[in-house]
Image 1 (cartoon, one colour):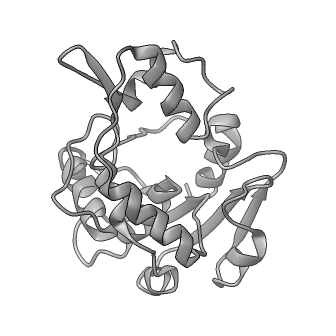
Image 2 (cartoon, one colour):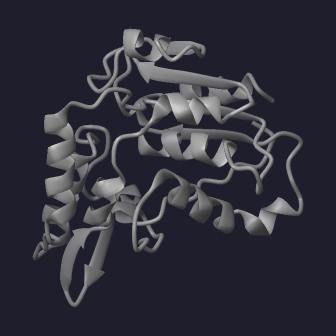
Length: 215
């Protein structure tokens, strides 16, 4: 690629600490804070690529009136339509206590299943460590359950607040969002053939090519 790439964890995910309350702008603020050390030496162009929730955070980051000067946004696998039942389910998950596991293997298998990564990584793959936490000899998923309470995104409002190029992409077999739903939003849409919701894991080069177009 020949240029710097930074991959921050969202608050309450991976190795990043949680927020007291989750919102798309709050998550974007945390990302901006984490990137502050590199903000003084900006790249030629700053293209933000985010997957699923991360795609919404990318839009919120680009919509900021202050902070990092985003040049373009690529949103991958963003769920555009939520049913009342899905929102209720997310609310229930946000209220659930953390589930603990006696061993890493059991926790890793749960992480891969809930992340849609089963079959893409083996439970003992070191990359899975980012999704797990070990405390007092027990294991849990790293994600803060309260993050499920972030709520339904107002994609139209987010897009209206962004004045840089935006492309929305999805894997051809992604069950979470359709081409028709994305095309209603009035921005360019790209469908990645043969890929699913985690297209960035299945074919990283195909997804990075979407960002390359803006450099």
